[in-house]
Length: 217
Image 1 (cartoon, rainbow, N blue to C red):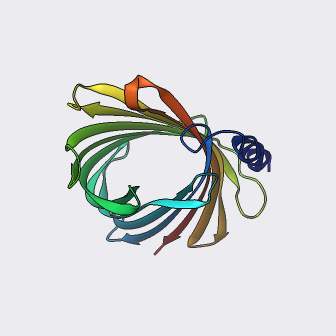
Image 2 (cartoon, rainbow, N blue to C red; image 1 turned 30 degrees about the horizontal axis):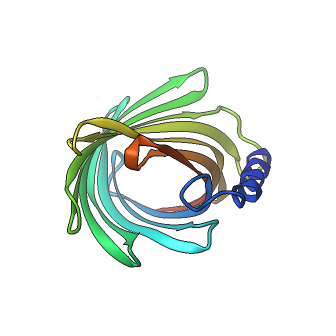
Image 3 (cartoon, one colour; image 1 turned 135 degrees about the horizontal axis):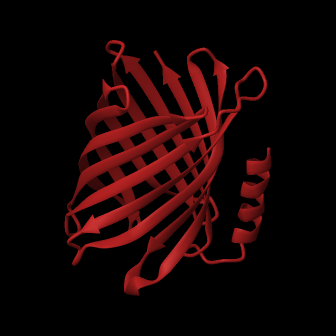
């Protein structure tokens, strides 16, 4: 409830700002996971985003990947993501293959994840580029109620190569919680502060209220 109240506060205050800075956005991510064996799974993901104070649908992606626990502390995998961004009134595609290596740890009940992703972004309407993403997640050891509500925080940084120079151009800080509705269904709610480097090197923020739904088979 604390995280939800924070998100509502930012949603109300964001209305004072323009769409391109301090905008309030809503993101929804749906994931379906299928076990191949004890160490391998296939994941399908769809994500949809609304901006301009959650009034304009501007982004969607569709993702398929396969992931394997190579070691107790290392998960590796890769996949393909098809992205559609709203550009000048129409949705333009981005073709994005990627590779992942995620380090896993446990410290006094705290779950640690350090995901490293290298991806290639190919466009029809602008210059292609490589991008490295590092996402560190800390899951707290506490679980509340029968739904096992578990809080977490995470931070993800983006490093773009060769556009026209290598640069750090985005950061996402998130705080939220996941909960189990039934055995194979989990739901999450989070607040994200997304900071992006735009034209002229100006940093702009977006306040995101996000929801996640995951089905595991």
